Length: 231
Image 1 (cartoon, one colour):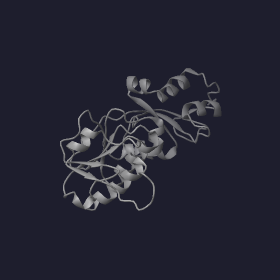
Image 2: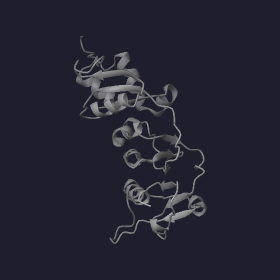
Image 3: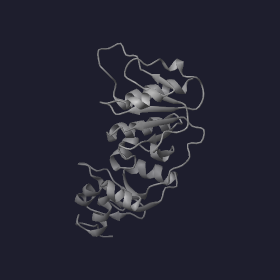
């Protein structure tokens, strides 16, 4: 098969539009990049609708040249393949603990939080203002976590005991009793809104002996998920 050599080819242009949040929302589709994410998506039964690759070694792929692949991937040195997938429907959190992003806007942080939640068997919830969990950047940072754990949008916080992560004056994780919980992580600079901290059932702080003011949001989430999983 002759490769698609024009990065303005309609197939390439339509797929590349999925880098925009509006297109993802309108079409319920997104892009994934790389063989590992594609393998994870297929294993999870995700609807893979198109695959673009630099050669014909990937089954049923549309072969494209480097310039077209770069436009699809949105990265300077794309690995390929790049696939268009249907965004899975949100699933129930069941009896899982839930790691909740409250307006965390950095894609790398959100992807890392999803990966952490999946690693420890937690669900991932997110409120308005959070970076889109299904954006290509967040999918790359999540390293397949989106296909391994429930990803749940939340207008309201879940009807679970809530644990608010605060940078100072919170208690240790030992103060949180056993049972299903929702751990709330706020934006790195602003933290959680005051009303959510005040209404939380518990507040916890990661105690650090060093001089830094606070931890990266995803790092704090990882430490707390690990510690709370051991209750």
